[in-house]
Figure 1 (spheres, rainbow, N blue to C red):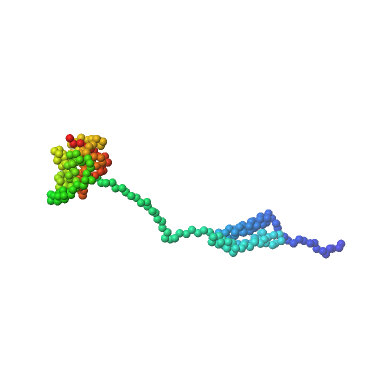
Figure 2: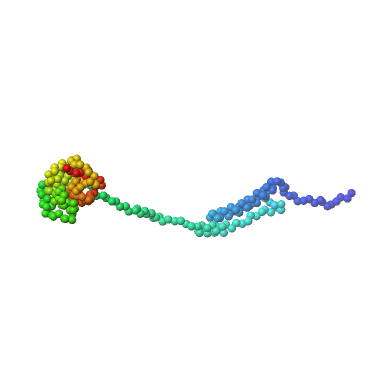
Length: 259
């Protein structure tokens, strides 16, 4: 029997392929794609990323060559991110910034003060004589005397003392306070009135403003005057003033008729 000298051929040994081999190959491809996306995101936010990756040995192809990852141009990505930052709007404020507020202007209307309550202190007789002499020397201005004075006994007497200074507690032409003036004028006509404004109110009859007549008394708390008709009165106002005709300033006066 003749022996054959030709040897049989055998395939070269190959790496065994298992289900895990397919899984490793798929994972390697996913990692490569994720690496590329991470590089783009990092560059857009101004960060610089270097990607260095290598396929595991288990991802070798059937021919033994490893899959190569594509290169990422980080310099271009960084330049693009810097351009975005440079063109972004920047809001700044100076260190010494200050704010101002203009308050609206306000004005106050100050009403005329009411006369002071009747004092009880009397002035010296020497000063009273001096001021009285000056008052008598000064004539009464005709324009300051209302027409209602003519023919009215009370107002004719009262008008004689225009210009007499206000004196605390005064009851004579040397100087009057409000009730001292009213009492003195009525005394010249033979009518005796009490000394204080509250007592004078109780000495007469209250009449309405519509029924008031020139010569009646105008009363408000702490002050009395003589009604001169229309919206006028004559009185001794307050310290620093003198007997005068003037407008009725009281908002709700009481009119008193004597006799």
